[in-house]
Amino acid sequence: MKHNKDEVIEKGIELMRYSGYHAVGVREIVKACGMPKGSFYNFFESKDQFTSMAIDKYHEAAMDQIKSDLSGSGNSFNKIKKHFKNLADYYKQKQCTQGCLFINLSSEIGATNQTLGEKIESKYQKWMELLAEEIAKGQKKGEIITSVGAEDLANNLYNSFNGAVTRMKIYKGTKPMDDFISINLELIKA
Image 1: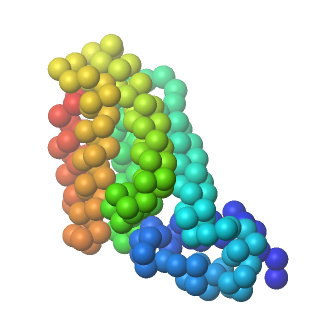
Image 2 (image 1 turned 180 degrees about the vertical axis):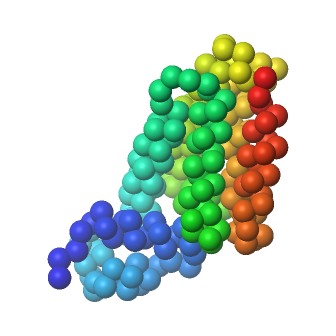
Image 3 (image 1 turned 45 degrees about the vertical axis):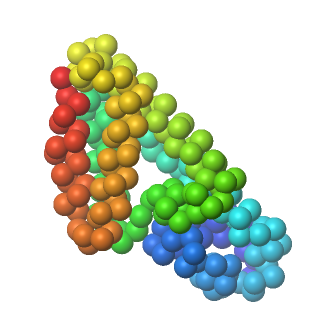
């Protein structure tokens, strides 16, 4: 059976979103893919290289989602709310058991693996920039508060939402994300 590198990365991302970095080793990835361990090393030099590629693939999909959610004309606040609602709906579909790859990696290796930690942070910054651009548009149109800068609001929204995702897994329910959408987002509305 021939294995596809992208499919191996996708399976590894899925496993790490459920179980985290430390609980998912090469053995778990190859077992889930139904391939011999040696085949993994035909694609990747190490688990770190695999993880770096997984970060890139996850980021690419997330950027597509953000761009789609924030595209078009219309009310910026509503587009931002739609973006976070789409994220929350995804986690609800997964019964609140699957986390964000970046949150999982950040909490487990962000401080101990400088290379991967910096890579995750640079990807987060790209998400923040897109959100901050939409917030700035909404501020100019009078839809979003101006008492806090667009970049600070973007950072605060993602930090708060990421906290809600973390709590969702512990809470085993959607209330933390529902609260974020019904309370935190409403606080930025002009």
